[in-house]
Amino acid sequence: MCGIVGYIGSKNCVPIILEGLRRLEYRGYDSAGIAVIRDDKFFIQKNAGKVADLAAALGKADGSLFSHVGMGHTRWATHGEPNDVNAHPHWDQKKQIALVHNGIIENYLAIKTKLLRDGHVFLGATDTEVLAHLIGVMFDECGDLATAVRLALSEVQGTYGIVVISPRDPQRIVAARRGSPLLIGVGDGENFVASDASAIVSHTRQVLYLDDGEIADVTCDHVRTMTIEDVDTQKTVHEVTLELSQIERGGFDHFMLKEIHEQPQTIHDAMRGRLLVDEGDVKLGGLQNTLGRLLSARRLILTACGTSWHAALVGEYMLEQIARIPTEVEYASEFRYRDPVINVDDVVLLISQSGETADTLSALRDAKSKGATVLGIVNVVGSSIARESHGGVYVHAGPEIGVASTKAFTSQLTVLALITILLARARGMARERGQVLARELASLPEKVDAVLSDTSTIQQIAREFKDARNFLYLGRGSNFPVALEGALKLKEISYIHAEGYPAAEMKHGPIALIDRNMPVVFIVPRDGIYEKVISNIQEVRARKGRIIAVANEDDSEIDKMAEFVIRVPHTYGFFGPILNIIPLQLLAYYMAVERGTNVDQPRNLAKSVTVE
Ligand code: F6R
Image (cartoon, rainbow, N blue to C red; front, side):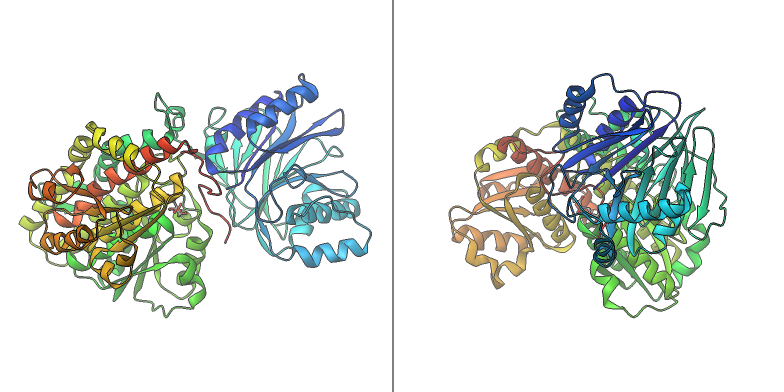
């Protein structure tokens, strides 16, 4: 999704902004732009395409561009197609302010109609240009940039993270946030604004996170934050722990491959200091204050989007079958508009890698306003969901740069397994049983490592099926969500149509699709329903479907039925998904590589979906 970086200080802002934009590329975007102030005038360059195109255009326009204040943007189109005109920054009628914006201005048409009546001329089709004009009008009236932003925003409905600069007041940057993340990087005689810490972490680790409804008036040596009603707010400086190596590819061809291979470590990190193997128990500091409410909850509601929603589905199996707590799962995007019945004794768990997904954040606010306890299972430290929850658990997967989520998913599953053991023990599960589960969980990093150590079969399958137009993924029990996630990964990065289904449901419809051209991936570990899945495999075989099986190392039967077998070590049923998804991530990856798609930034997708 869109990215923002801004700078004010004594250095040349141009390379700082370009570097920041490159670090934000992973979020997914279709155009990029920069505005700087030089000799009390704007220099603005923007174009459809990549940051490299922007840098090349800048080089051609003015290779020696130098400025102390400026901002850049990567745009993921919402209103108006991705072209040079609609790219940010935008400016007002008199070109006295420039604006970059993440989010959506919902009432932009009403504002635009009024401005058109007053003679304003708009160059493009974006909601952002309308906001730029509105701020320009206010600036004309009051002559103070921060006040102009405040007044304009009080007329705006929607979501925004914005940065505004003006040659009439070149000593400041004004930033504001509602619903779209924004932080201020605090430097020595210089300050930064960014939508994501990765954009500025090579310059400073000291950051202030803006809250919703806050405005920041930033000069090179001072940051004032206030509400939209002009009341000063107090901020705490946080230290960002992100390492540069974590946001670089480090010898791998793609971030996605790097992140897939990080999983033995990230799964271990999710458990570290939390899983008490000898006691067969779990300690989660972030749930300490809400444990009572969790234990007395009438039901748990897990809500999330996309891959995180698949994690929630696996969580439902674990929580119901091991901890015996009634659990429901719902798409956050549906939850927020369904006006669900929420009671004060419900606990709502929000699962999100980014912690900024607009639908998930809205679901959190809705549940909270209805009196429920809301807990976050989040990767990004300090993100909105983490900050607005009553408590929660960080998954500690580190920055996930590949747009297709991989390591965050397995870390979310690991944390859900930890929560399950914690609740099960607190509700009376025997220590011995807890020890068995804890041991099994602790052994997973090594087993994931074993899957990753030989990917030759998976690469062979990718070569064989690279021209397939459809794929079916089938699994049962907690491997049904794995089928969904495997299919999603393939769709996202290879653009092959893929569907995940509960294996037994196949005969109620999708079986019509099976012919000699249909690859069908079965997740078939040797568990309590192994024989049932084998029957489903036979049904596909009888119709000449091509079978790829993810099966256990000790399963010799499967060779007789499947054209390809990907082996995974045996693990306890409920934790199986943490292992079984790994080959499916790799399959999607190698299929995409075979097809030559952009693995890390697939078309149309954004990393953190901060709009509805
Ligand atoms: C899929 C993917 C998306 C996200 C979804 C939710 O690979 O990355 O489906 O899982 O947009 O994002 P978070 O987890 O950040 O709330």
